[in-house]
Length: 250
Image (cartoon, rainbow, N blue to C red; front, side, top):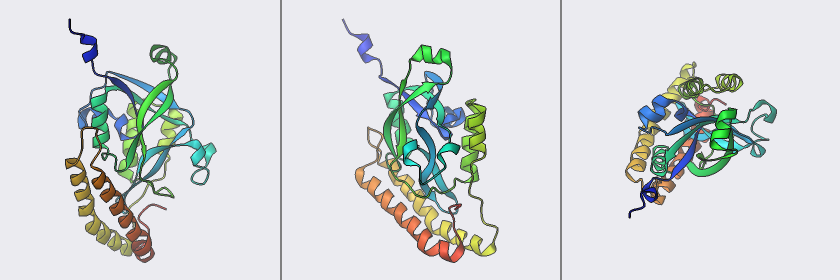
């Protein structure tokens, strides 16, 4: 007789802390329908805007770091423990999440322990809960500010997920990058984004076509992306920022 239980897909709890908290992004954009959803807190971890993006446009994206690693970056007392959504999904769906988040170029797969915000959820799923999520594999320090567009995604995701009011306030008060008002800086921003924007688009394309079964891009592509991002930010730091003004919100 066939063991039907052995054919059931392995399930994981995936922690979403950024734009994936929005159902429009996670279910609509990524096409993933979770089997269960729980609001969770991750003690000892905080939100970190340390994934480098494109200066003058999308300077940074969110990640998470242990609180013990942030003394020189942010005020520990002013930064709350990470709060997000835990989605119960299959391993195949989690690999799809990894692939859609850069295939290992900027993020790496980690496990963290969290706790449900609601007592009934804690009783139902256990305490603590082991979560899989994506953390920093390519970082920028000091942290650039996120764009207004990206910050709004975080705020909207927090509102939709009905995260605690204080955490929603923390997200809404986060500093963001505002496009320059000075004409000279606008010129520099236009030159920079015109030069590097197509390169970023190419990196996204080549990453997408090189995704393997485990959700990661080919190692050579990961190396190419990271070195190119290093060059992009070096051109900002040593050429454009001194001449035109910074494009990272710092």
